Image 1 (tube, rainbow, N blue to C red):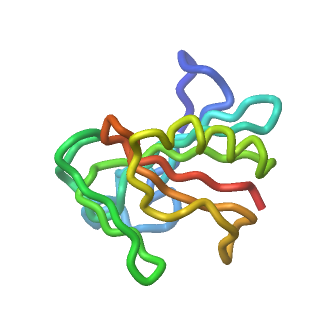
Image 2 (image 1 turned 135 degrees about the horizontal axis):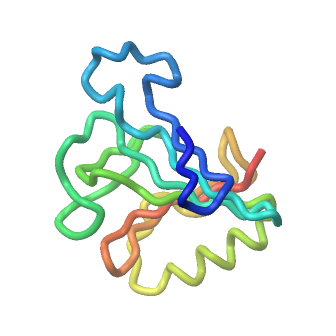
Length: 130
């Protein structure tokens, strides 16, 4: 899905775009909305599968158990970078007063992955691009 009035390149695929049957509840939810800079920095927002309530901030909780994210928030914001150093600088800027959901460290799919809920209640996912 393209939005010509917003900064490009902007990509907003739904779960149906990735093969979920259109009649299944949640198929119209956003897998990710992505804006990428020329330098490789990416910001994404995505709907959390199975969530229909909740909000962006406040009143929600997010935790990781057995490599699975459990939350009652409606969406997260994701930051991606080609560089561990750049990613760490963004992590450190959002860390004061935050609750760390998953420490920023190497994972099975990324040289660096982490999640935190900032002091305003927004949950952020960080990853180094493979």
